[in-house]
Length: 143
Image (cartoon, rainbow, N blue to C red; front, side, top):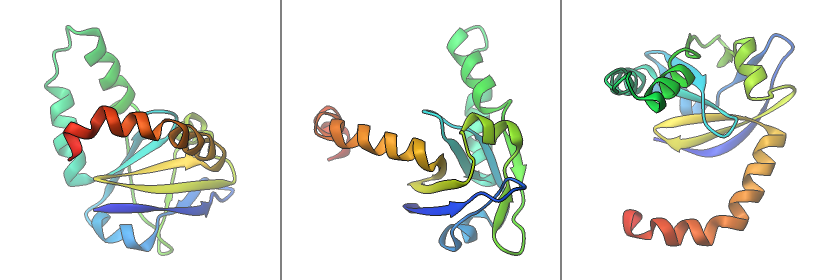
């Protein structure tokens, strides 16, 4: 389970460190892809295979299924960790997430999200303003 948020720098080669608490879950490998709201998703390979299979089973005759498959599957890349626990984030993914110097690595149960520090601040500000309504809307599902 991934929880918490951490700040790490993005080096000149586009590498970012993944918190050591998360790395054990990625011992069999990881996949990085475009996420939602301008972030990147990192999945452990086992979780990735389940999700990719589900997406692959969506009816390609539906426009929304094709768009979602293109967003998630076509942008995905397998990554390996170096000796310092860093992954190399592909250029097109760094561009999508506006990753430059600082990244926020956020654990969200079954996935890790990677945000630019600036985008994370904006997202947190939005969440702080909308939290009451969101909890009210989802209260029956989470309690």
